[in-house]
Image (cartoon, rainbow, N blue to C red):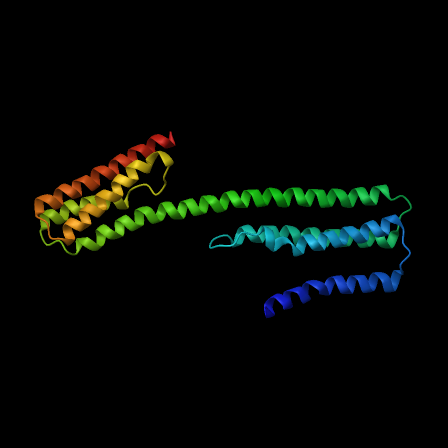
Length: 227
């Protein structure tokens, strides 16, 4: 609550100072150009204050948010400079000053909203990548942990073969590989349970080979999807 109040106060500082200067120095009687510039400056500042609503929160998304902040700050400073210039000069014809500032605002909103769409797409891709990474890493870690329970060197080599296949498996995934990944997950669970329960060497080797084959099948589907 305290932080929110402080942020609101900080946000109001410019508005208070600008309006005090505007009305104290210029009074209340102004031309269309001056009032239009006054309004555009306020809109630019409101766009800056609204930037947090467009930013994506989450790990690895700071750069995406920074680009939105940078564009909003540059637009505000540019509009402030242009708007104050028109307020001081107060040209007779209002069309060009209003058109220039309207184009600035429209161009900024267009670029900002395009960036928001691009950032959302990037956020989805990052989330998809993290999910894909966790799938292989989780299965690999399960098999690695069970390796310490295997004493037979021959069995250990077979399980290690499957473990290496998992480690080198593609992190990328496609919807078409869903069934293959479910089969791979089931094969890994079965292998880990067999090792944990102390099944015979033949059974563990058989299940390790099943994991290896499941990895190969998944990779084959993924390679086909890439073509």
